[in-house]
Image (cartoon, rainbow, N blue to C red):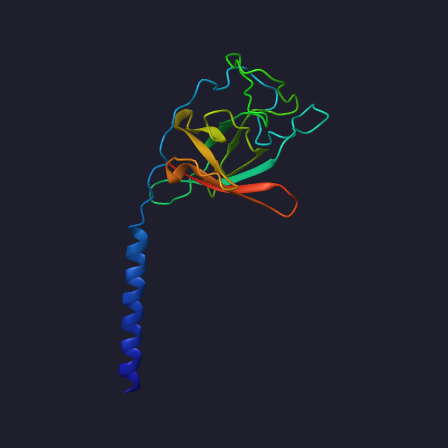
Length: 195
């Protein structure tokens, strides 16, 4: 009797494991939708091109505004992490102004903000940026532009739209960056990029 019970348990566990493996093997992620580049893709070289847009090398102060830590992962459609992928971001400062020759909006630019940066994914496909919550400019909700580069080629151009404090931009769910304020008053959010 005990042998039959044991055999039954082994068979059930084997079938369960097989089903789990089949479900995991069939997991598919939808590619992150592309979105327009916009007119303010960076065209001027800058000395500091890292993933910290708030503290710029050679500047005596930090950028002014609400700090935002964006972290995420780049995966393929099967969920495999993508290493050595370059993510570029560009955005407005806290006043809603770009640093670009075609920007016609009036107002002071933050001289301590980097406006553009890049990060490479690690072996687990992870990346991170320290930036500011971008200022709004009508009629656009706060957003961060980004490009994904693989082997020197752009494979995706899109935007992350900030979701916070009841702000719900009407965009594809995959393009929403939900952020939360942490105990030190800074914000953070996770953004998965599927290529």
